[in-house]
Amino acid sequence: MSKLNTDSNAYTLGFLAVMVIIVGGMLAFVSSALKPTIDANQELDRRTKIMKAILSLSAEEEATVLVADYVNAEYDNKVKGFLVNYSGEVVEESIPTSYDFRKEMKDASIPLESKLFPVYTYESDGKKVHVLQMIGLGLWDEINGYLALEDDKETIKGVAFDHKGETPGLGAELVKNKFREQFYGQTLYNEAGEYDFTVYKAGKLPAGGKGVDGLAGATLTTDGIQAMVKSTISNYSNYLSK
Image (tube, rainbow, N blue to C red; front, side, top):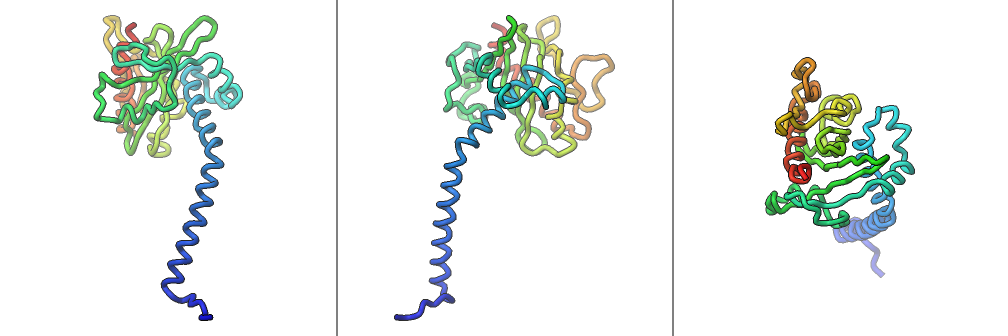
């Protein structure tokens, strides 16, 4: 019997091929085994952001109140999600698991008038909050979030933001309560019913004026938030006017 030549290219390639198969199989197994946990964590994260927007809490309150059990109980008992079309009509009484908001908004082949938009309503103590989903572009990548409106559909109850790649200490500050709390109680329209809400560049908010003071050192992120909120209200305008 000839001795196996461990120095040959054939041996090296064969060994690598076997290792790729073994490691790939292990990774696939781990990924499959962890998928339920990953899916559950992603769903909890989505629900937590929605509840952040709805409840408009302080940073201290969020840390103590928004635990998994509370978030899931409030969401399951008081939140209803459905899809509306551009005309503001409800076309799906619940949001299908197959619906992908990001894909829907970014698919240029679907005309705006044909897109579907998710709405979440939260009812408590006889009052209703309407939550709209947002997506936009910051300095480096996508920014997104949820905008919660009071029952009058024009007063901001709260917001929750997230991002994919904004600069730490600058644009990434959009997730912090110090920035988000400026939105609480703001109105979207003027007395004539025209859209009238601005996220100003840092330091440009008029004294005693309406609007939000932007993020210091993050002009493009601030501009992205302004554009995202405005386009969101435009997308949902027919629903909000009903």
